[in-house]
Length: 69
Image 1 (cartoon, rainbow, N blue to C red):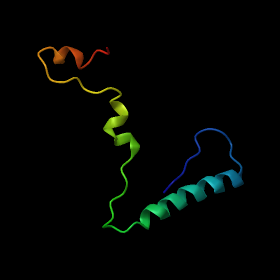
Image 2: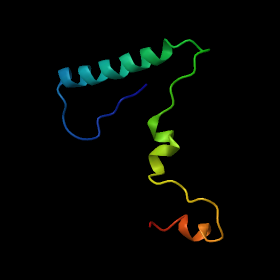
Image 3: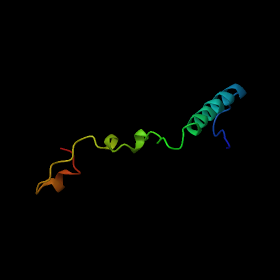
């Protein structure tokens, strides 16, 4: 694994702290047994995108699926 500093000039202590966080996260993920599913990310939750309920099926429902009320 390679870490590259794009901007700024971190001190050796700041770089060591960031690397410790990354390594701790990687170790935590590696410690999960293969049979246990990992929790799904909130980014993949469809409820995050759908702010309103989908209109009930009706002859005019197609026109209400995109435009907000």
